[in-house]
Length: 83
Image 1: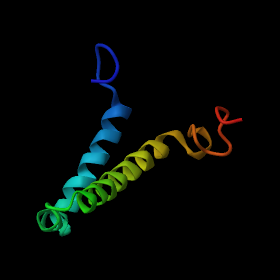
Image 2: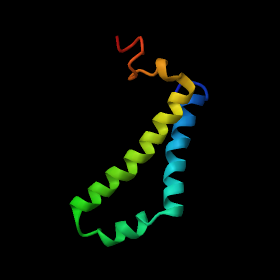
Image 3: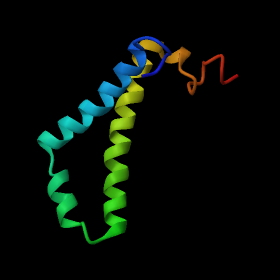
Image 4: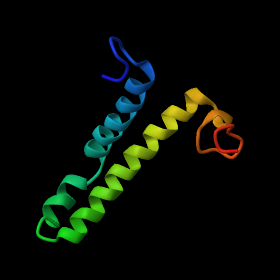
Protein backbone atom coordinates (compact mmCIF):
# COMPACT_ATOMS: atom_id res chain seq x y z
CA UNK A 1 0.00 0.00 0.00
CA UNK A 2 1.48 3.35 -1.01
CA UNK A 3 5.16 3.70 -0.24
CA UNK A 4 7.44 0.73 -0.65
CA UNK A 5 8.05 -1.26 2.48
CA UNK A 6 5.97 0.74 4.89
CA UNK A 7 2.83 2.37 6.09
CA UNK A 8 1.89 5.61 4.35
CA UNK A 9 -0.01 7.66 6.95
CA UNK A 10 -1.18 10.31 4.48
CA UNK A 11 -2.46 7.81 1.93
CA UNK A 12 -4.22 5.84 4.63
CA UNK A 13 -5.83 8.96 6.10
CA UNK A 14 -7.27 10.03 2.77
CA UNK A 15 -8.47 6.52 1.91
CA UNK A 16 -10.15 6.19 5.30
CA UNK A 17 -11.82 9.60 4.86
CA UNK A 18 -13.14 8.48 1.46
CA UNK A 19 -14.45 5.13 2.69
CA UNK A 20 -15.92 6.54 5.91
CA UNK A 21 -17.86 9.04 3.81
CA UNK A 22 -19.38 6.09 1.93
CA UNK A 23 -20.18 4.34 5.21
CA UNK A 24 -21.80 7.45 6.67
CA UNK A 25 -23.77 8.03 3.48
CA UNK A 26 -25.00 4.43 3.53
CA UNK A 27 -26.10 4.72 7.15
CA UNK A 28 -28.06 7.98 6.87
CA UNK A 29 -29.23 8.31 3.30
CA UNK A 30 -31.44 6.60 0.82
CA UNK A 31 -28.71 5.91 -1.75
CA UNK A 32 -29.22 2.13 -1.54
CA UNK A 33 -32.97 2.49 -2.08
CA UNK A 34 -32.32 4.96 -4.91
CA UNK A 35 -29.95 2.50 -6.59
CA UNK A 36 -32.60 -0.21 -6.48
CA UNK A 37 -35.22 2.16 -7.86
CA UNK A 38 -33.10 3.32 -10.80
CA UNK A 39 -31.37 0.03 -11.57
CA UNK A 40 -33.02 -0.17 -15.00
CA UNK A 41 -31.93 3.35 -16.01
CA UNK A 42 -28.21 3.45 -16.84
CA UNK A 43 -28.07 7.25 -17.07
CA UNK A 44 -29.62 7.80 -13.65
CA UNK A 45 -27.46 5.05 -12.14
CA UNK A 46 -24.30 6.67 -13.56
CA UNK A 47 -25.38 10.10 -12.29
CA UNK A 48 -25.98 8.74 -8.78
CA UNK A 49 -22.62 6.94 -8.82
CA UNK A 50 -20.88 10.17 -9.84
CA UNK A 51 -22.60 12.07 -7.03
CA UNK A 52 -21.68 9.46 -4.41
CA UNK A 53 -18.05 9.15 -5.56
CA UNK A 54 -17.70 12.92 -5.96
CA UNK A 55 -18.79 13.56 -2.38
CA UNK A 56 -16.36 10.94 -1.04
CA UNK A 57 -13.52 12.29 -3.19
CA UNK A 58 -14.18 15.85 -2.03
CA UNK A 59 -14.02 14.68 1.60
CA UNK A 60 -10.80 12.80 0.83
CA UNK A 61 -9.21 15.93 -0.68
CA UNK A 62 -10.33 17.97 2.31
CA UNK A 63 -8.57 15.53 4.63
CA UNK A 64 -5.40 15.87 2.57
CA UNK A 65 -5.58 19.67 2.59
CA UNK A 66 -5.81 19.73 6.39
CA UNK A 67 -2.33 18.19 6.53
CA UNK A 68 -0.80 20.25 3.74
CA UNK A 69 -2.23 23.62 4.63
CA UNK A 70 -4.00 25.59 1.93
CA UNK A 71 -0.89 27.22 0.41
CA UNK A 72 0.85 23.85 0.08
CA UNK A 73 -1.98 22.16 -1.82
CA UNK A 74 -0.96 21.52 -5.46
CA UNK A 75 -4.14 23.13 -6.81
CA UNK A 76 -4.31 26.20 -4.58
CA UNK A 77 -3.61 29.69 -5.87
CA UNK A 78 -0.67 30.29 -3.50
CA UNK A 79 0.93 26.94 -4.20
CA UNK A 80 4.53 27.02 -5.45
CA UNK A 81 3.63 24.15 -7.79
CA UNK A 82 0.97 26.23 -9.52
CA UNK A 83 3.03 29.35 -10.21
